[in-house]
Length: 460
Picture 1 (cartoon, rainbow, N blue to C red):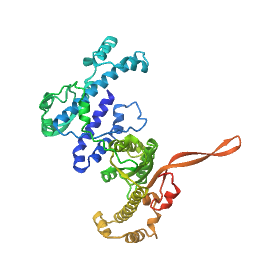
Picture 2 (cartoon, rainbow, N blue to C red):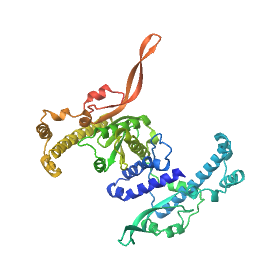
Picture 3 (spheres, rainbow, N blue to C red):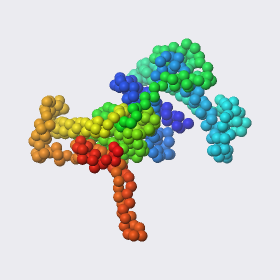
Picture 4 (cartoon, rainbow, N blue to C red):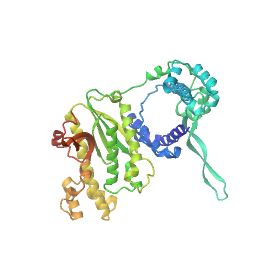
């Protein structure tokens, strides 16, 4: 039951963030990517699997279903719980057969075309398992989680008596029918937040999935366009403060972001280029890509969740002496660009923005470190132009053209793309060159056309 408990623990973390997310994010796609991208699965893995290492970063796909009425929402719950039951019943039979000595192919053949009653009889006759009594309800029914008001101890008086206050708390419930009137009436918070269930639905009705799917808007992205999936850190200023990032730029944090981006390119071969700065990364998918059928929700959620998981997993490689105090969160969005020029303009805009922000931040933190308060530093920089900031940096640092001496990664950001690497190999005729494609991380000027002319294969 470790996997189910892990998901429940993650859900608690997610649910506590929902109010904050919805108050800050008006776009359903961004909220969706934020929720699915939470790397809590990675950070909580050791709690539930203390003897096992997480061998690679997981990613999750998601989609949004708009339920137009309580009837549709009720049908959705019936559908998902019924699917849970059918899948678990089939999986239970399958793995019992495999454990008994059958091959996986033999087990699949035995279960092909079987009905619910057939599988119940198979479990009982061959393995003496009563599906309803012997299989834990978390497997058969899934988990329903929601917030409800409870009396919680907030402190203790001097005499030791507890002081209780009503608080909203996430609870988990395993119920045979989460769409029933009885379940809804037993949990008044659901009536208050979602509405009233007027009648029970037939749990075994086979067409609820088609009914609910009719409300699903897949959101396919425009064909024959470059898709850019932009990943942004959420509340990263606070995250950088809590984890004591160096100001104005922490090279460890930038290298961590770059390592995550490189791994994303290696995982998704349709991504041909990525550009990153600070806590954001833009991933460019090739124009002809059919990854996930060009469905925006699946593309964004898959990339964001993988990036988030990688960030948590790779943290120790770049911050070996600093424990991650809480996992960071990222949101994402997908935008289509119809021409190479418009795509290049987008990437140039991000690099210009990198320069502007970095120049300002470098000035700001130099002033703060010189003794000024943050308000005084902001006032000093108010209304200044690029040349004013350069003069300020030269004066404060005592170095001519100080800004240009800063690391290129800070001034230009990072470009991640596939490139050819040639290695010398020995053969019968002597040394020869053997090339292969690898992911490289460079800090190039992508505003200038010369970069694209030198790498025509990136955009095709």
